Amino acid sequence: MGKKRSRKRYEGAFKGRVALAAARGDKTLSELTSQFGVHGTLIGQWKRRLLENLAHVFDDAEPRTDADQQSLIDELHRQIGVLNVELAWLKKKAARYGE
Image (cartoon, rainbow, N blue to C red; front, side, top):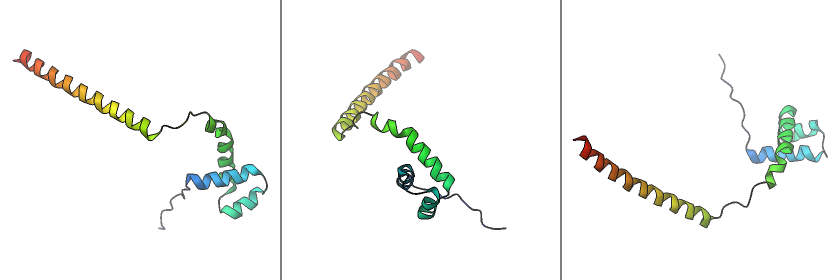
């Protein structure tokens, strides 16, 4: 028996370059296929996916800054601490009634 063939995986940046080249329309599908070494069906799927999701690129608000993320992490750590203290108190009180 021969080797088991696994599917080839492409990185997102490569897919984006190929889809963008296809969306430009300055080359035919067969030219893109030979240039990038990818089957035409995949190029078509990537192009369609690019065009469908293009509007969502500008929907998101500005990405969080490091300071925003750090303050969120600090707040979550504070909440965890409070919950741990409450849990310890409840365990102590429950032990009294369980005797």
